[in-house]
Amino acid sequence: MNFLSKITGSFSTPSAANPTVAMVEAAYKHHGLDFRYLNCEVLPKDLEAAVKGARAMNWVGFNCSLPHKVEVIKFLDGLGESAKLMGAVNCVVQRDDKYIGENTDGKGFLKSLKSIIDPAGKSIAILGAGGAARAIAVELALENASRITVVNRDQNKGKDLVDLINNKTKCKSEFKDWSTKFEVPDHVQILVNATSIGMSPDIDARININPDSFRKDLVVADVIVNPPMTNLLKDAKAKGCQIVDGLGMVINQAVLGIKFWTGEDVDPEVMRKKLLEVL
Ligand code: NDP
Image (cartoon, rainbow, N blue to C red; front, side):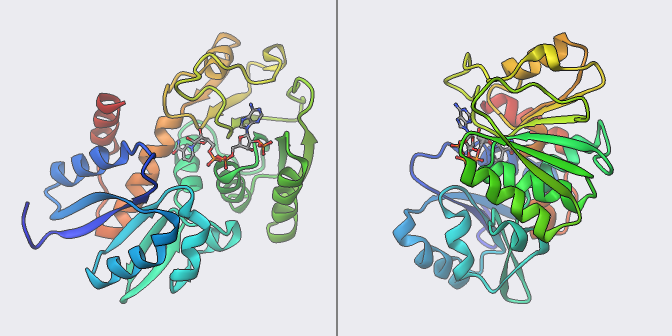
């Protein structure tokens, strides 16, 4: 290690597995960037001290994973547009000696989706209303999606996201209760799973949805990284739909973070290769 390397990293809880470290370090190495990416285990009670420590050590930025994404905001100096709307930060960037909170989760998803379909003017159904769903819904709305249907078990959480989109963006949104098997309505052109259903180790878990309602022209996206080919995506493929896996989202959000911190556009393929190696 060069002792003058600029430091970036991640504040995670002790239990969080973090494949991002290997991926980001692979990109730094491939592009000869004199940066390091360190994963630091930070308990919620120590978050303020950790941010102070990063400032003291002149870190150029860091990622925050759950449960720090909301709490970190009060220790920062400002927020980017989508982070402000979502009320959640996953990427902190040093700008003019200030720490600004950004959210690259939704942006990473958007980049991945746009390689298949432009969401502008489209009707989209999102399964889930947690952090990933909020990040994705806000970015899709800012990208001029015409209608977003939020499908969730917990009504309060679902309706909260719907209100956010209706009140803060030009996109129309509605809530769909998820107590019965979800049938994809005819108007929906893009379906996004933003729940954790199907994530390792519960890879056989089935989403409460009827695959017979998948039309051939429907694009189906999943946020799950491990395994990349979920049961939902298998079903969608079998119905002839185009699919978007969760690897693209995690890789693109890292590409965006590195751009924020170093100013460099790094090769996503280098990171995809490393990620598949470590998963
Ligand atoms: P949250 O805990 O914030 O939200 C989870 C959501 O999933 C909630 O809406 C919850 O519904 C729903 N849910 C969970 N289990 C079920 C179930 N059995 N049936 C119906 N709904 C269910 O998690 P996140 O939003 O942060 O993360 C969700 C997934 O996204 C995770 O798998 C995570 O790994 C992935 N992710 C992927 C990223 C990537 O880069 N690819 C980035 C960020 C996250 P309810 O509200 O009713 O409880």
